[in-house]
Every structure is written in structure tokens, then in C-alpha cells.
Image (cartoon, rainbow, N blue to C red; front, top):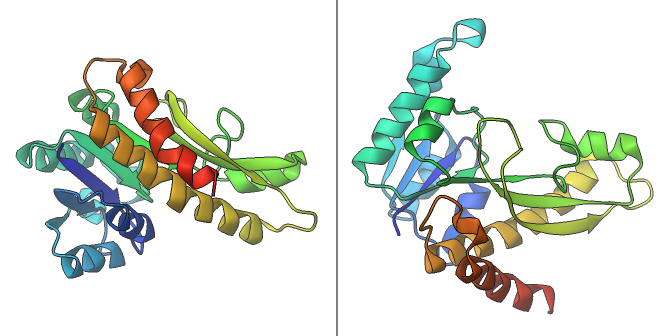
Length: 212
């Protein structure tokens, strides 16, 4: 299966994916980012679709940017799109061209605490457990089908930074295992995440790590 990784930052999730045997056919960044350097150092094909070329703030043309990203992915014959710290929300037109073929991770146990300030929301709510969620991307933010989750206990005295760091550690372990399982099982059908083969593959990838 041909996988693309979309990134905006330093590329730690990209590095974790590669370390777990997920070798993307293409890495796309939306800004000049260290992730592109990591991709080049790893011998991966990479490209920049610079969001600054599509306007700024209120004038940002999300549709045009998203279409440009989709064009690059289609040209590379990508079958699964993995968002890895990708900071630009993609338009529905792009998701329509890759229906149920885009996955992401979120620093909470969805459906609790969607949005960009999930860790702060969890601390404000006083929950004892937060975590990370791997999910299918739909047009509504953080509302897609859940593929897998990993709980992270909230410690007394946690700050946003300390809790988020432990969540990111869990994310770097869970996410590549789920993606590896998807690649192994395939994404046939509109609701492929309900396929017993996919669910079994995810369990086989994740369970040994949890049982260590």
C-alpha cells in the first residue's frame, strides 16, 4: 500500500513511523519544516506545498491549497494519507478525493476534548485519565471513526506541558503500530475500519506493546 505522510513540524511522528517499518512513498509538508530534512536524510521522496502561497489568515484559500495537496497525492498514486502533526485543516474537497483514506491522531480520548486545546481542556475538566486517539479524518474536526486509543493517567500537579509530553510518547508508540496494521490488512470498502481483518491486525500490532 502506498502511504503518504503529511507533516508541518520537526517530523518526530514521521521518524517513528519509519522506525516501525512504515516507509512512506511520499512526504508532504505545508511549510519549510524539519520534517522535510528528515525525509531527505532517510532517502524518502518529499515535496513542499507551501500554504503561504495560498494567502494568509482571512485570505487563506483552503480549497485551493487542499486541491494542490490532493493533486500531489494522486500523482503519487497514494492509497492512505497519514497526518503527522499536519497543522493545516484540509478542505472537504480533498477528503472527498480520498474518502475514508486519511487518518490522524489526537491528544485526548475522543469524543472527549476535540479541538486544538485538548490537553488544556482535560486538565480544566479534572479528568483522571486522558490519552491519545487514532481516527479516520472526516470533514468535522476530530469526529471520525475511532481506530484505537491509549489511555494516559493524569498525575497530580501535571501541567499542560508535562501531560502533553506523556501523551506524545504514547502517540509515538500507538500511531505507527495502527498504521502498520492498516497497511497490512488493507482499506477495502467504504467502512474498512469495521472489517474484522483490520480490527484483528490492529490488535496484533498493539497488544504485544501493551503487554510488555
